[in-house]
Image (cartoon, one colour):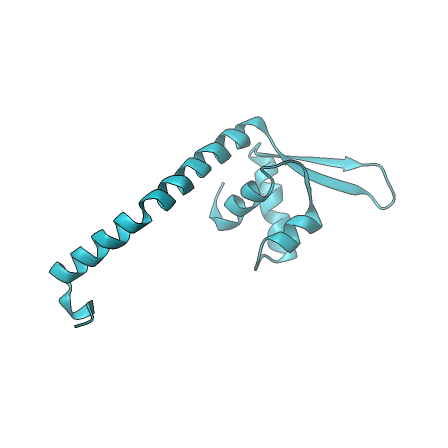
Length: 107
């Protein structure tokens, strides 16, 4: 798995099966081709299951595999950690810049 698109697809599909067009509309900036390639790679990696329904037109849904749900839980914990600590990190950066890079600090 690689790239920001993979993470965004995993997050978008975390709440249940999702159709291609839903992903395409929900992920800003992704092209149809990149979405197709990324979904194919996620399926190859065993993170996404693709189901094709025999309807006219064919209906295709993508859902996370159990191992991808586990990964998504980890991503969510990381996101939560970043949110909880964003003020701390901003303050640490400001203190560092003041001490080591005073030319960047508004004076």
